[in-house]
Every structure is written in structure tokens, then in C-alpha cells.
Image (cartoon, rainbow, N blue to C red; front, side):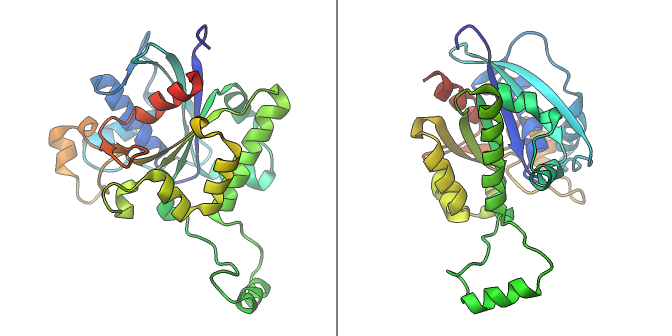
Length: 280
């Protein structure tokens, strides 16, 4: 892959923090405080302008409006001078729900899926409660609940497994190329209130055991990476602007949790390490 840029694409459902992470990542790149740096002319950051301004004011950015689909290309270099074209999307996470309901990858997604060498899947563990099953409730209770319901709803982790299956099928069916390397980013890590040193892979197994097993069985160890992320470090409120963001700067806030459970302020680590996995 030395003669071309690595293509990395980002995916995630609604309310997982894609826009906040993208805005904070741009802040790190502009401040040149991470393990990645921009290459070439600065791209158009217009899709993240409102979120960047909100964070600088110490308040959360607005939810991406339904029907929105834009993509910001971040041309970056690693410390080893590996070129990466990072395609950061700005789309309402509800689009993933439509994909699962329609059971097809829309045209607007196809090129991004097919050309990517690596994927970043963002998940917010707090929003992925385990579904009740025969191990947590008596079978009779589940049967009664099912008969009273209007329809069957997939559990959050089943939805994510299905999304990965669809992405994998689309990639192979149209290109016959090997599956991309995968980085799973567990967002809003601070709201989990975990003991210091908690390893992201163990947290994934705890909150989403089915998804964790699917990833282990479909990606070789050196081609799968799991991180924790707190893009803003604390929960932000529109009613009470965070003074640290205002006086220190948004680019000073947030951290990544590495595979070993260590917190680091460099939010570019997942992209840099995914590039290493692709070149390994």
C-alpha cells in the first residue's frame, strides 16, 4: 500500500458522538498535538463548524439533522509518513436504522464502504443494554411478553452485528477484496464510571458479548483494535457552559483509552494504530 493513501471510513448509529469526535479530532490536527498531522491543503471543515463553535463555548453541538449526508476528507500523515485519507461522515445516525430496515447499502455509502482499507465503528455502550433472553428471564415470561408485543425488535448488539455483516458482504460481493481492518471505538467512556485501568476489550465483552464474539471470530487479532473514547471528557450541558472548554480550549479536553486501559489525550491514536495494523 506504499504507493497510495490508506482509505479509512467511519460508521456509527445515532447519538454515538461522531460529530463531537470529528470536531475534537480537527482541533487536535490544527493544534498539531497528536500523532497525526495534516498533509496538503487544509480541507473544508464546514460540516463541523457549528460543533467546533459550540465546544469552544463549553456546550454540546446540535444533533445532526435527519436527511443530512456530508463527508469531510481529512488527508493526514502518521509519524511514519503513512498517508491516510480519513473520510469523516456527518449524517444522522438514523440512516443506519434505514439501512437495516431496507436491508441494502444506499448508493451514497457504497463507494465509502467498497474503497475503505480500514473501518472505524463507533459504539456508545451506555445505549446498548442487553436484551432479555432465556438466561435472564424464565422462558414463559418471554413468551408472554412476545405475544403481547406488536412486533419483534432487534437488540442493539444484534443490529450492530447485522450492520457489519452487510458492510462485509457489500465489500466482498462487489470488490472480492479482503475485509478491512476494524477499530471499535467505545464512546462516552466517562459516563460508564469504570475503574481506572479498565481494558476496552473487556468492556466490549461485558456490554456487547454477541458483538464481541462476532468480531473475534471474523477479524484476526492484529486486524482488530478496540479503544475507549471520551471526546469531551465530561458531559456538556447547554444550560451550564463548561468553563474548562472556554478557558483551556476544547482541543485540551478529551482522551482515548488504549488496549491496556491507559488514558491518553491524543485522540488521533485509533486512526494511527489502525494505519499500523493495515501496514503490518
